[in-house]
Structures are given as C-alpha cells and as structure tokens.
Amino acid sequence: MNDLIISKQSLPPATIDELQEWIIVNKECLNAHKAKIRAIQKMNMAIAAKEAALQDGQRLGDILLDAEVRLGEMLEAIPKQGKTKEYGSEGGTIPTLPPDITKKQSHEAQELFRHGWAVEQAKKEAREEGTIPTSRDVYQKIQGKKKLMHTETHPVSDAMYFVEIAKSHLESIREDDPKREEALEGLVDWIINLL
Image 1 (cartoon, rainbow, N blue to C red):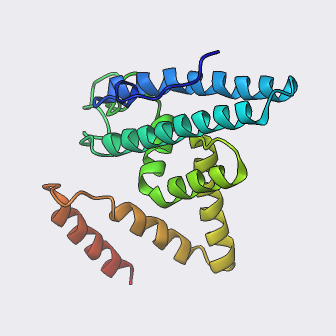
Image 2: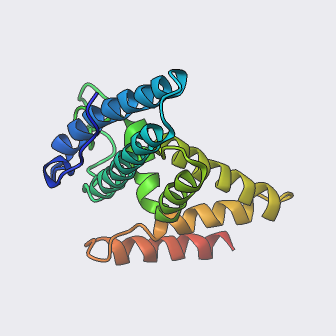
C-alpha cells in the first residue's frame, strides 16, 4: 500500500454538501489506514514503517477533525427557519439541514466547532500517545467534560449547570443576526418575570 500523501488538492472543499462527501470518503481512507497500521503490527514489520504510517494517519485525522469543525461552523451559520409548517399542512417540521446530514451529525459537528479547545487537545494527546485523533473521541471528551462539570461543580442543584448550557448557546448567536437584540431583550424580560 502506498504511503498516504496529503496534498493541497486533498484539503476539504468549501460547500456543505461537498464537505460532507469529502469527510465520508476520507473517514473511510482513515479506516483503511488504521487497518494498514494493524497489519504492520501483526507482521512485526520495522518500527520505522509503523511510525511513518502512524504519522500519516495522524495528519489525516487532524485534517478530518478540522474539516468537521468547519462543517459545524457552516451548519451553525444556516439561518433557522420557522419551527413548524403552517396549519393545515401535512405537519412536521421544516427542514433546515441539508438532505444528507442527520440531526445527530449536525449536532456533533457543531459541538466540535463550539469546543475547539477539545479538538486541539485531542490532536496533542494523540501525538503524545501514538494514536489517531477522531471526531468520535473528541465528541465523547466534550460530553464527558460537561458531565464532569455538572457533577463536580453542581452536585445538588441543576440550576448552575443549566445556566452554563444556556450561556454557551447564547454566545453562539451571531453578532450580525437581525433578531439578536430582540431575542436577548425577550430573554431578559423572561428572566425578570421568573424572579
């Protein structure tokens, strides 16, 4: 198997549909690369061959993570349409996601975008541990951090935990959103009424 060569042409594209396709194809490339590393280990090939294969896999893993962060950024920037269809229609919700992206994929990609620190930490840890960073590992790290924060800092009350979640979502509102000020004022009014 030839060594993996990551060139400028293999960098992620700029549209959501092309980026999603690129991510799917290159995840399969990464899986093949992991299989190559396992085969090298089973055949007791030279350490240099394993190191070279691991470095190539880590570079592809890094680029894939960056692509998924970019996908999350692009998905978060999609304007949200009305939540439900008009009365008298077939019912259901108006789709805001591109057709080939599930809500789960969108959520995970947006979480990676919102938690860039976790992506960079995973890349660093992968280099130190001799592993390949994956979006699944990073997403689980983010979820684990949220649970840890919840149980350690707020063992009795959920209030502070939910306030932190709300703040992280509110920070995601774009500065150029035309309804930003109205939404925040409505939130302040709601909070005042609760008190």
